[in-house]
Every structure is written in C-alpha cells, then in structure tokens.
Length: 327
Image (cartoon, rainbow, N blue to C red):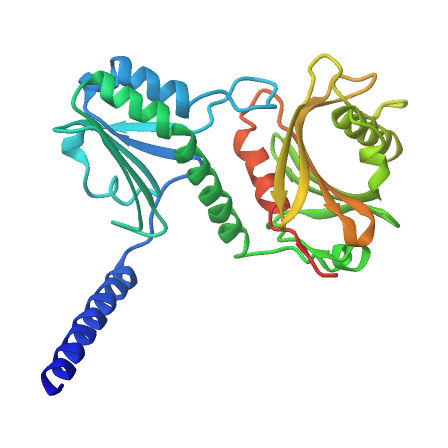
C-alpha cells in the first residue's frame, strides 16, 4: 500500500508539472499579429501556382455574400515553407499545406503566439491534398470567422462608446467601438454613426412584434418590407423625397443563425437611397426574443463608395454579435 501511495503521488506530481509547463508556455507566448481577415498560407511556390493553390483561392478567397462588388472572404498571404519563421509564425491565422507520407489534417491553437489558429493540411499527392481541402475548408472558415469576430471585439473594448441609452430603451448591452456617435434617438429607434474620410458606418436598433417578421412563411419579404418602412420613416438623404430602401435589383441573402443563444434571421444585401444614387451593403440581424414578444432588430450598413467594404461590414457584425440581453 505504501508503494502504491508513493507511485500515485509521483504520477500526480508529474501530471501537475506537465500542466504547469503548458500554462508557463501559454504565459510567455507573444501576441499574434495580422490585420483582420488576413490568413497566412504556408505552401511552396510549385504547389501554390498549381491546382492546390487554385483550390485554396477558390475556397478561402471566395466572394463575400451581400457586397455590391466582389471582395474576397479572406486576404491570403502566401509564404514558402522555408520562410515559416519570425513574424510569419506569429500570424493570427495560418494554414500550412504540404505533401508528405500520408494524407491528414490537424488544427492547433496558440502554438507560436496567442490568439492563433493553425491548420495543417497534407497529402501524398495532389489529389490527396485537394480532398482534404474540400473536406475541411468549411470547418476552417467557420473557425477563423468566429475568432476574427472575437479579435475585432477585443480591439473595440479598448475604447468603447457608452451604450446606456440602448440598455434603457431595449434592455440589451452592446459593445460599440470608438468613433460611433448617436445620430438619432427616438422612442423605439436608435441610429449610431461613425464617419470617416470616404464614408461612414451605421448601426440601427429597433424592435417589432414577432408577427411582423413571422406573419407568413416569406420571411425575407417580411424583413425587406420592415426595413423599407423603417428607412422611409428615419433614414433620409440630403435631397428632398429620398430615403433608404432595400435594393430591388438584387435579392438579399437570408441565413438562420444563433445570436445571444436566440434564433436569429440574418439578412445580407444592398441598400440604396430612393430617388438618389447612394448605395452600399447592409447586414440585418432579427433576433427573436420570445420572453418580450418581439424581434430585436440590429442592423449595420456601410457607405464607402469605390472602396473596400468587407472589413467595415465585419466591424458592424462584431458589434452586433456582442449583444447581451439584460432582461
């Protein structure tokens, strides 16, 4: 019994040392680098310039849904295997692709820096590698997008705008990044706007009864009619008789997602000013709040003519997905 007790103590001690070692490594990891929605692709030139590179670009640089001009899902930065060191190893999102002795896939976090996602894809030949990319790309994209939302929220936390008025009117909190100002505050409507040199980002918050969205099975038409009604009442241009509507020429995309543990309809599309030429992308989150018999609507829209809009819309989504219900 004495020997068993000593052995148990030794095992526990070794396990504790191993866990402490992991924690120590995590503690000394430096901060990862990289712009939002950038991914480092570690792959040799001969593979990048062939079928494998084409497949990677097709999956990870596919056009973003809902933008008026084509913009890639991620900005891809390719580096040969031999330079996978220094600042490249500290990239926040890394995909390593190579040919090896067997086909395989592995995912790792915080290996060389934190926060960090690293994905390893390998195969014995081109067909093997292509199969792994086909099978695992959706999982990789989902992981990177989720972590980039969190990264965006962390950056915003460094200087937040007060959400006190939102809490009072709608019973929710929202992390609103620096630069946003309250543009319009009504009894059941708030509009925040952040202006920059080439345009602006906007957040709208309002609520409607559940039957407004669910009056029939045509959810996309109901949401479109709802936001057009809100636009006519509140979002006007500088010219007379102009207001925001959903662009009729392109049908919006509709997704069912989960936000704050609640069923949510996410609509992505293009807005325009009726009787004017202004336009841009929008993301509309209709969050079902059964407890309060409402859909809480939080919408973001961007105006940035002739310039990139992907990361501006992504910033809006990071703000919207930070919502927390207080009652």
